[in-house]
Image (tube, rainbow, N blue to C red; front, top):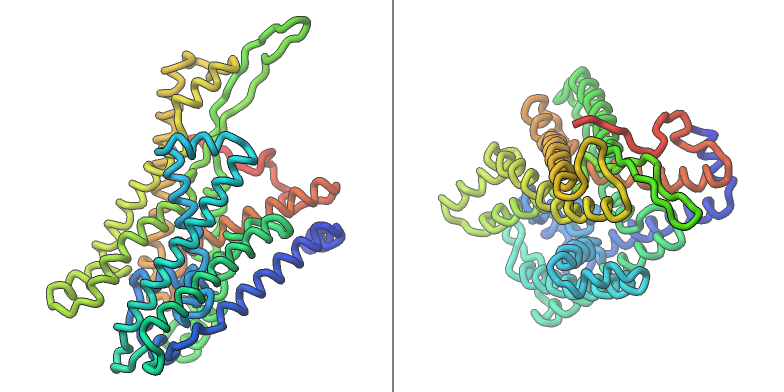
Length: 442
């Protein structure tokens, strides 16, 4: 592993890309500590502490704590992600966007432009909502969050401009990393925001052990569980179900085409982290709304929707299953895949081309999607299990773990490609996988 890192820095282009990526991430972390004007930081911190388990704490995780401090990067990159998902879903609905997605580079540039415009629009709406909401909020001890010296609309306009500019700058950083750095820029920004909480969790655990509030054996068991879960996530994220495809021979003139075997790889977790993100967002909204309504029965409902409650996790798993199948259905069209295979003379051994092939692909896709949904659900409810049965003082697992492992694997693969192109051994040199994926039978 050490020699691999040395080889990575011997390649000038790769070394420059890695350094550029690290510098951009440092800029992101600096901006995450520059506060927005007009805010009482102490009152805001007390307010967020009382809102743990709501959508505010959920978004704060992706911003690396910037939302809790209401810095210039408080919105983080979430508006861009939301705009990207919306555009992707609309591509299936509107024929114009579907045609753009098929026009190559020109169509991709237009879709990127629409995504940027949607990001700015969502940032303005969210920034205005945050500004208006903060003006009516106060800390648990009654201290106002917004400094009273500022006029209402002056604070709103200043906050909207600041937060929108911060999100636009983060979007620019992500695109620059894509072009001049290594890895996916947007994903790395989220990755950097999440991993900043790891040192604090480790220090807090050590302090609890020293104070006698957490047994050393329990911490060792948790560490082993963490290592095992990380390996399991890596295994599942790199696993595919390969469907054998045979191509018939075709004679055109004096040349013979086809007559070779291939395979159709289907990822076990084809939906990625989209299902947990959507499910968490939907469940966090009711918890956030009920937190502001001081009515006994509403507060009782709010208690059932906390992340450690059984009802919350039951609904969480159901929503993860729903979004897994929904998002997979959007990404894969078995009928279209079967038609493309038939067009180029491909067929699955033992399956008739056409409708039977589409039914077989749909059957396989349904089985592996069910397995992927089970895997996502297990990882996402793991924090509650550790907290309930082992009294772990920090949340390990869930969406954050999936993002961190997924981004890490993607970045390693890109570095691997650079090393292999220069005839260097990569990170996966001892792997027996030919395509970087592990084949499973489900």
